[in-house]
Image (cartoon, one colour):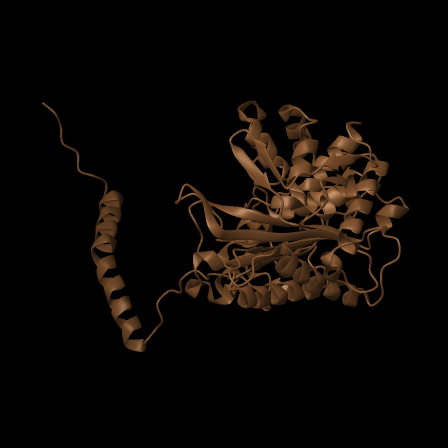
Length: 462
């Protein structure tokens, strides 16, 4: 039979004390809470939340374009470079605060608090935007763009788009105003493409600078008839093919290339290729597979239709002519990586085409495109606008451009301006060329005096 033993007195005492504590503690806490409320004691504080830091975006000349933490981001220059800078807001599913423009593409760097210095010159950017706004208003155009490149370095001194908007008030802006057209709007450029064909033929030995070319006023290729606008002789020199912007002369020259050869030359100048710049969104343009070209495609692309580009891509291509044949990748951030320059043309070919483009300006009504006392080399382009919704080109809708460089002998700057769909005047000579001169005048005034030989010509880039 089991014998029951009582617990020792010490254990019974400890158990009783423990039970008493457990029973009394809730009452103690309740009374303490009540007393605290009666004395007005504050609740325990929440964790402190610091403002999320964010780096500044500044121009090369020190103007602040974006500043402040994420929750109090501000854009001190208002509309200046607005479509380029973009804006930031609440954190997105991908972890970014930047919603548009450089605020988006440079978000990772800005989140670390790192300040970003752009290559832009605020004075030139403001001048370009002001002149674009005037052109859009004067010609009742849809939009306008301008890119100013520093020769040799590829630094983008201005990348202006109009319309634009104020990032401080981005909620009221429309999508069209936010579009960074200078870098992403693709358009068919027209006759500004003709110098690249001439350059490729000269470099490949298919053309001599002193040759003459048949230039009828109309020329039938495949199922399409091409016409020249300016009256000229039936035979022209190569420089005068560019001066008169002869479509027939250009098409006759293009017939010296197989389609694959012409495609390769255009690609070498960067057309249809991705830009190496990663600091901002850019577009690659359009250059179709030459295996699909029919004869009228070959002819059309030679005169700058059926091919698409952007202001930035076109400026980089013209810079090859300015840089004695070197392609230098453009850049927007002072310390961003760019690939090494590569040679497209010999210096002799580049200088020969540059001389032809100076002749084009100085021997025609384009003399009005040059800043007095500053020799300029350049070319106009008037291109039909393709409407995807309409499924074709619409009569009366044009993109008018001027691409050029100055001073012509040793260029310091390359610039491309485009006015999209002007309505009151549609001639590139009367719309784009004066716009080029107005912005170029601001560049020269900023220099105070016409520049000496640029750094690249002294051996900085070769």
